Image (cartoon, rainbow, N blue to C red; front, side, top):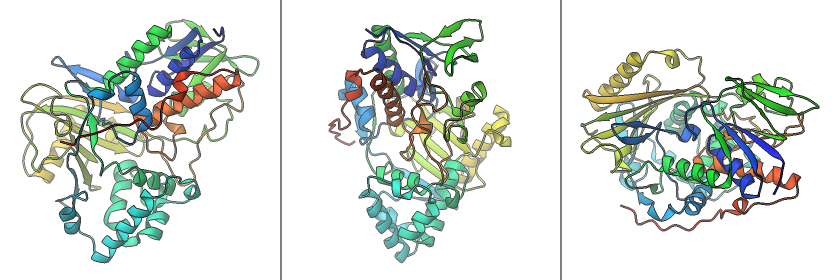
Length: 448
């Protein structure tokens, strides 16, 4: 059993995966420090009316093998059910589907551009590695494989909805990896009767408890104290001092760099984040046309996506209610909308509904979450920071800022935590069974 002490900064999925793997390898002194009241980070949940809801939309992808392997390890994979709910685009006030032949034929794109779009998607699906597209833009990729008409008809809307940026300012490698994943055309998974993200977080928390990991919640780090070219102590806002031999940062890099401005690890200080507004609401109304995922392709709209969570998981929430998730991706947290009042936000989301659906939505309740540092902005020159600090000898990194060019997901967050744990264990000549979770978990999904 290792006597090396480890402090994990942040209790999101990356931090939980790191802690579990190290404790599984026999490390008896592992501490996770989380600012929020509960662990989970972006996979967190809230309670309303006796039901558990995600802070924002979450679904299980059948090609997210790391996530599937964790669900299998926690003995809940067999309870996952699969559906193929409609994915819609609202472009210039009209609804469109690209995941059905008829919908694709009706999509506002020339016949020649539709053939080029099929060529683009076919090439992307056949290409598992996108390292050769690092340093090039999404505009370069779409124009080369699909053409400018395809980019203008669809992809400019998509990069704006995700980053509030045009294709030329978004990474071609990231877009290619996203197209390869085919997230919008495959069945999506859920667990009936529960919020599966909470099931995952609760399972990881129970696993850490069994392995002896200490978890500190409602704990804000005020200072990271350095000595002998290493972090030695994390001082919390309540005066507690948590010392460690190894520190793993899973917090957003902007937070870490403020605490440790002298860390000159390549690329760690260059990461910039989008902001996210997520409003989860209850209503007895149904949207028509009904979809799970509606991409709002308009720069005039406040919402960039509207999710009807019941369309994927019919058992979510209270009986007789539909659970709607309005999502707004913002270029950064300095955008005026991020600071708007709850009343103004909901008024703007309701205005979107009137323009899109033609009628008012009567809400029963709402829960608004503002995430100031949500997703790294994957610009064409984006490069992952290394897994280990080049400035401080005992610091390792994990989190969504190290998952490029893969799409950010629960699985990639878990994988980044495993990678950090693996780097630590290799440094000390050790191993962990959790590091070898199958990346090819077999699932069968009778689609409903």
